[in-house]
Figure 1 (cartoon, rainbow, N blue to C red):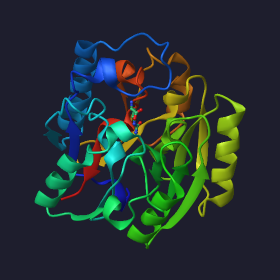
Figure 2: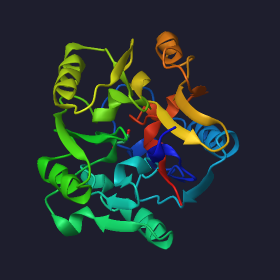
Figure 3: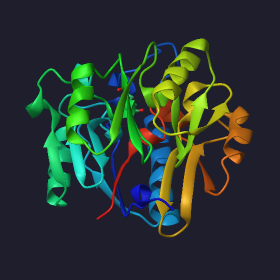
Figure 4: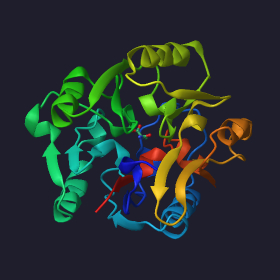
Length: 280
Ligand code: CIR
């Protein structure tokens, strides 16, 4: 279906026991994370990748000194055969990329380290939306313009567009790729609508935008063109976000798989953030 999303391998990481008490979170009033429940939901996520999609899953070892280390998406941007190890935008997350860097080098990827190119650059992978055609980089909260420039230089064959992110953790907290050509968007508030308007203004392609009612993280889904099932969109659980059903039904041409990551969402984790993908 699309050359970019035909992955063979997913990389994930275990949940640190320090996550419930020490992970970063936007809202300190939400109830605490249950480590056991988060672990079991994460296992179901890995089972989907391994058993349903037929991917090889590499699980990096957990590091207790890095409470957010399960969120591997933030430490690397992988497009084609190049992996850019990012410098995460929150100080407690710097260092999470080391294990990923070793793993990707061992796998023979072309690995580039952002901090070595520009020490002032910062990017969380949650701010990077790759559509297969172009790259959008959310700039404002965790990622900065210097980081955006490193992405432009590292992936010169693609148009790279900076999008201002206000009052949200990441760009992909409010929109993500449902399948090539289709972007899922949260309609939660005028701030997101403004951000999406600016994305549409700079986009070099015509995408179809599908709106999800309710909670922002309901628009965060994961597209993989798998060997075993063909095109698959893994989407948030309807139990956790009951209003999203019609939005996901509207995608068409993909197998929909529900996945409940509600426990990690208490510390702002979404579906895309717990894995990265390669084709080797
Ligand atoms: C953080 O605040 O950095 C973590 N608690 C959550 C990161 C989620 N990352 C993502 O969605 N890409």
